[in-house]
Image 1 (tube, rainbow, N blue to C red):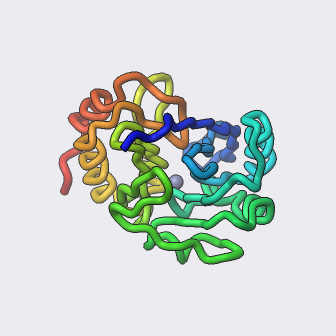
Image 2: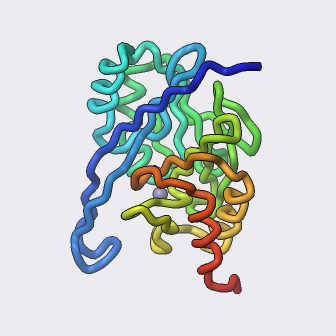
Image 3: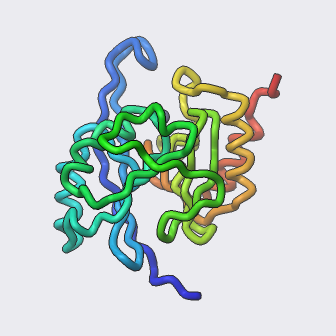
Length: 215
Ligand SMILES: [Zn+2]
């Protein structure tokens, strides 16, 4: 079966973390939602705080509208990923909201998100469980070629990094999930924080070699 080529439109916002959250000084970072086309419309991956307006503008640029949004998938239950959910759902009430089963109870939503588990499909994406950062953190794979990694990894200045330990529920489990993602060998990885980098799997193997020994 041949899929039509999938289109991905990132929606990038600046996120300011006040001093004391990840270090002694204020940190500015980007957070990305993604608009992903599929044969019957569009789906959204993550909805950061204040993302509804920029998502709406990106939909317009693509010649689409909120009516075309069939599904909203949340990679995990952190506010920089679900903070815009209520606004998004108000604009696209037909969209079905999904999240990893173990994170569903922690996501404030007008309708409780529907639970996802390993191997489940939403439209053209397949769920890859990657727990650790949160218990129900998921990644999403398109034909084993493109992997939306959520917060399992981020990129900064062309290098890969692990999500900060301060925000990671179970670092040992998170490391195991990174080894799983490396075995998938996707051609591209799309991060919630930071732009794409070339040859991400090689970069991930390099990161894993630097890992501290698991206790
Ligand atoms: Zn997170």
